[in-house]
Amino acid sequence: MGADSFIISPLLPAMARDFRTSLSAVSYGVTVYAICYAIGSPLFGPLGDRFDRRRLLLLGMAFFWIGTILCATAGNLTEFYIYRALAGLGAAFTMPNVWAFIGSYFSGGPMRRVMGIVMSALSLSIAVGVPLGTALSAISDWHMAFWGSAVLGLIALVLLRLTVPSSKPDAAAHRGYLASYGQVVRTRAAVIGLLVNLAWMFGFYLLYTFLGAFVTDTFGLTTSQSGLVFMAYGAGNFLASFISGSVMSHLGARASIIVPGAASLILALAIGTAGNRLVLLVVLLLVLAAAQGFGVPSISSYVVGTVPAHRSTVTSLNNSMLYLGLTLASAAGAPIYTDRSYLLVCVVAAAAFLLAICLTTLLRTTPSGNSRNSGDNRVPTRPSAE
Image 1: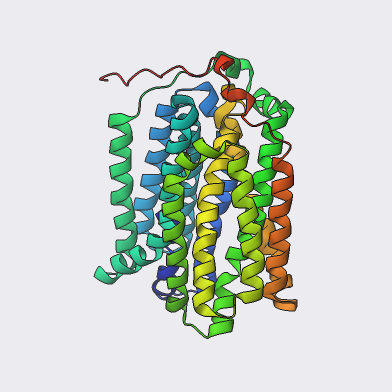
Image 2: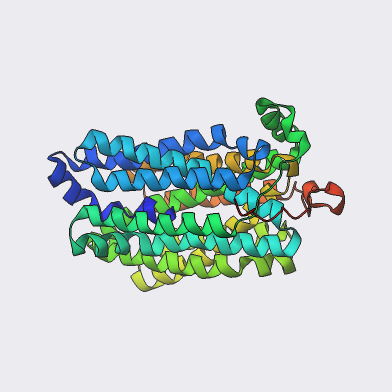
């Protein structure tokens, strides 16, 4: 799903020619996908607390797969919008339950390690999404990229069907749809954790969204050359995310957020003041990628354990914080970058990381939902041979 989000970027010019429309019109396909994900995630999230998450994962992945196949067959722009919306809804149905399932099936150190490993796949998609789309489209045309994404989706669907066990929802989750959100709002650790994620993502997306423009304006690189910078970032982020769980086990939940948060703050200021040298900029970005790779899984691991009976609900809200951070960063950062400088963008990003650190100090060392007495450490039953 992460690769599918990035795979469209190199296809936009070819799709615009094929549909006989403008590049900006085709790019709205990205917007449609993101909006459906952002709206669908909090709407579908509580379902994972009331029903078998395995079935919801299969259903969401099936919708995503069908939507991707239809994108490959789209004959006009309107059809493409509709099919991207379907794929976005499938992703919104699936991803909150991925994190919720991890939180319910694993606990303690294993949960943090698995969370980091799974999140590293999203980091890897930053590095492989664009070149994957380019390589597949070179075989034939832009349709081939979506066919390739559909093949990956089918593999994921089959693996889910064969390996993921069933999970029984907590009895407390049956009190009502809105009650799930009410319980999350009344849980102090969950609210603070969500605010930490919002502040963190606002700071990160300020840096990331305008990095391409800064690199192009400062060093005169082409789009493909600047893309190599993003690939380096994605690769570094992947490696850090993959091992973040082991680091969290040694540092503890709160320190695993504060330490990479402080590193991100310092690196944001360093990029703003010393980023006019390309080699140094790439080095700073690689270190930032590592800091983000350790910090983001740590935040998600904490949040997913705050309300055990409503994991899908709280993780869907956590996903919404990510998209809200992206929206606010793009809206606030555009005038700052165009009217001022990337240095000021970096200063504001550093302030956002500082806010995230301050909020983290208000959290408990371990979320209350992760205590041994929470009664949520049961192992779901294996899928029946249905």
